[in-house]
Length: 81
Image 1 (cartoon, rainbow, N blue to C red):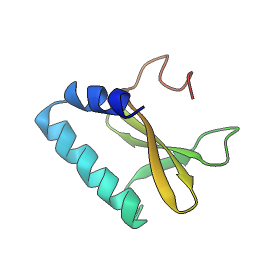
Image 2 (cartoon, helix red, strand yellow):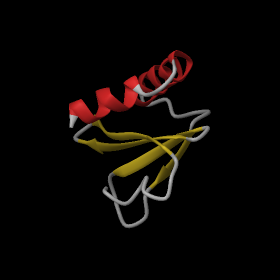
Image 3 (cartoon, rainbow, N blue to C red):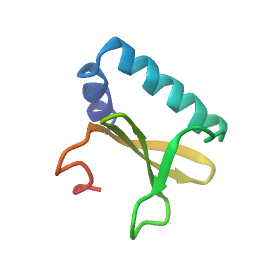
Image 4 (spheres, helix red, strand yellow):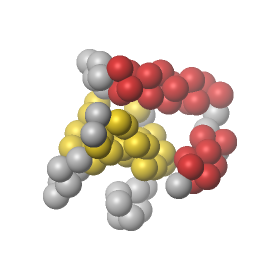
């Protein structure tokens, strides 16, 4: 799964990567203020953060954050989770 995340990050511009890094730091610290975070329907532990047309899907388990996907918004964005 890490390869998928790295590949997704490489497709983003430098500016977008900086924004994503900042979002990761906020999520890791537990400070979600200012982020557009929603719990995905039908899932208790999977959330998404929206920044423009980029979506970051992540899971919180045992106090740890696991990034599941980083994708541009499309019809297929949430299907494989």
